[in-house]
Image 1 (cartoon, helix red, strand yellow):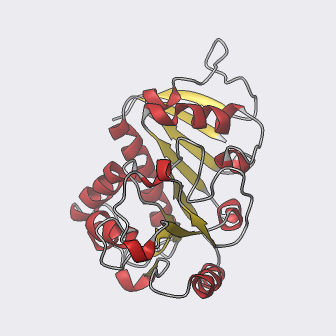
Image 2 (image 1 turned 90 degrees about the horizontal axis):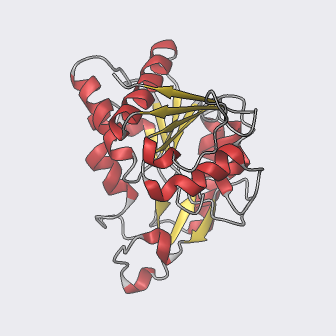
Length: 256
């Protein structure tokens, strides 16, 4: 794990975009694991700027979303809607080469289909991740260690006040399990806000613990953790910038 403390959320977005641009230049047909959430809005905005300037070519890449809420397909809070607003064609992806769980399908059948789609793509080359305040990654929630795509009931604290129509309550989601994430060839996690600081500390400095699901990825051999100052504020560093656990490399980096 390589942990980078950057100067701002914007610097985190640029660093993540740099990693994607380099990966796409090496392999134009790479398979991406794509997240949603507020942390990702600046990241996708940076990718869109680079695409418009001709600095990023994702025309041959494939995208697999990490999860989707079980809401009506036209619901404005669905991850379909988020990706249409912020990513997909805006960053240069061919929508026909992108997949996301279908909330209108039978959930069990859709989980099985999505696992087949991940396998058919050859797994993820590069997965971008956020982290929840409770340590969840995708919608792998505390206490879970499920490897395959599955359905979860989204806790109210995680749902963030989504207006869920009565027939769709309680709010549920289809999520990739930890298996495809652990098998991804590279992981890049972004965290920028103070409520993520405890979860970041559990990821970087704690043991692998199902109570903090992101920590179950900490042994991945190619894992970059990109942090804005507020998200890194609970990390315990030794003099010289080394973190408490020697398995991570902690660097302070200025953004461009």
